[in-house]
Length: 331
Length: 80
Image (cartoon, chains in turn blue, cyan):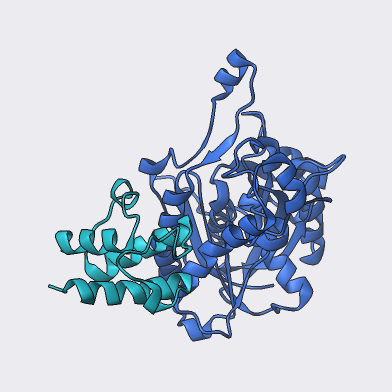
């Protein structure tokens, strides 16, 4: 019988670099309260958000992706030709096809890298990272660029006072490559499509065409809060255990930056020691969905709050509902 | 089976832990939102905490009816 050769991968994968693109427009709570009937105090008390970032003139999901993707490749000490797969997680590519990833792969100058988008909402970065790790270890790719990018401001309903202050824009990228030691722990992931109506678009694209009115991103906050602070806090605990780490061996905790109150509740559940540095970028960035984790990690690395070699527990969770978390070693 | 007072005491500790309300303020006649300044997110955490602490299940449609500390204690007592 003719044998078919199998691909040969690396025994381990790790994150070689992280970069982020922070949009230029700052929307503080005072400006937000010109759109919705709310107050700075109310928003801060319920979310920890002081201000958020929206795309400004000339910025969109593509430009943010090119910005952080290009810098992530540089920081990894690679050239675009070294990248053989590009995964973009976004809900902000506002056509069904083509995906954003092939456009980004071409404009970055890759040599025709494999490229595809994934739709895993706020869990998108962890979903993409899990796939990148598997691609490198299987040999299907050697260097994978993972980008989480969102322009949620384009689907934010400024007449919905329960969500308008949350959503924001931004992008973050990581390059995943082969390694002699393991840098990405087992992914703990899953979904609950029974709660598909918890975070949703108000209209389908066909309905938009028929009605001529926009489709907005809406959310039922309380069931999502309940899910995040129970099931997702438990998934975070399992991701830590799956990597073989005890809480005292963890340096950084970077959950999806949805709301500081969710982060606080997770910390109570996880009982992490005070020495663990906790991502809080939601305060200045807002909720950037798939981009929030790499944006938070890059901010912590650039400020010196986190260091190269640190262990970090990341977990994304959002519309689907879907979630994914893993322990990583910071580049 | 925990008594009314035992449930109130444990609930007071929970409310204190989640929302920082002094335990002595958590009395049966107090409204969570009006008197104790517990917001909707903290209320979710208190409900989840009650489920874990007292081994009861409190679905969302029932939790909306629990306006006062006394409502919550009575619910827990009758569902234990």
